[in-house]
Amino acid sequence: MRFAPRTSGVYETLKAQIDLAELVGQFAELEDRGNTKDCFCPINEQSSKNPAFKIYDDSFYCFSCEAHGDVTSFWKLIHGFASNWDAAQDLARKYNIELPQMDPEARKRYEERRQREEGWAWAAQANHERLLGGSASARKAREYLTDRGFTEEHWRRFQLGVDAAGQRVTIPYWSGGQIHGQVARALGDDLVPKYLYPKADEFALKRRTLFMQDSPRSQEYLLVEGFFDQLASEALGLPAIAAGSAGFSKEQTADLLDMAKKGATFVISRDKDERGRERAQDMLESSTRTPASCPTCQAMVRTLPTSTGSTAKRRRTRYATLWRRAKTP
Image 1: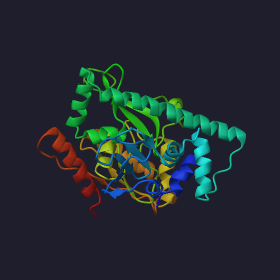
Image 2: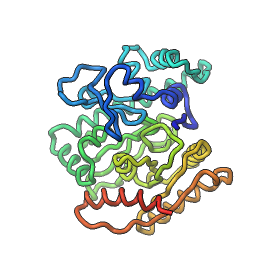
Image 3: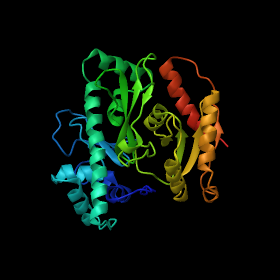
Image 4: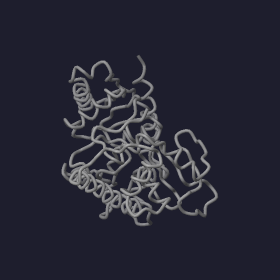
């Protein structure tokens, strides 16, 4: 069951209560492909002969016109509303959903947050288009992503990109179907620091949120340290949440505990080295620190065997094995 996150508002409420596939299905015939539901683009006429519009849980991406977003974004595009707020109000009336009440000041803050999300989304789109371009730096970035096991479909689904300097791969900081910031990973080992992160007040919520693509659900999640680990797990259809190199903050831990109280459970993964074990222990202690969460927030730590073969194959094998072994009693 999908539910709204701890810091939810109008748009998060709609995502939690409206099935995006059911909504899109009112305008196009969907094909169930397992991890996605596909159709021909209902927003703009597409020239290709294969369904280009893909639905990933509560977000969509069109490989034809590059439209992307959530239920509110889709409703805005399909009906031509002037703003997301207007689209949200109309969508709530259609589904008879009572939205959170907001005084003028609260609504102003919430709209400012949405604007920051849209600003990060535009930056992600610009970097993504640069990745698909013909420059030498774009080719180098694509080779790097391919070596890590990510295909073009993954680049497009997660809006991966390359920065203007052509020195870093960019990863949109997804949270609940929206982009809250951007992480940049160096393409070369000689470029330091390896990762660049937004400052806390640059995030859409003015803090780091949980790194996850879709709205939270009452299901099992894999907790991982790295952003690429999280993306790889999601690409394989394995729900995951990343801590990042800084580990889970107090606010993020509160988000996890809120999810646990609503039925989510967690499996903790660790890397094989000492640092990975220390990070895993930190995640374990954070997720079970509050006694009230212990009956529902379950955590297990496993060490993966070393795989053989090419780098890409080794990574893919690791992610698949990781999930299976973490679930073994």
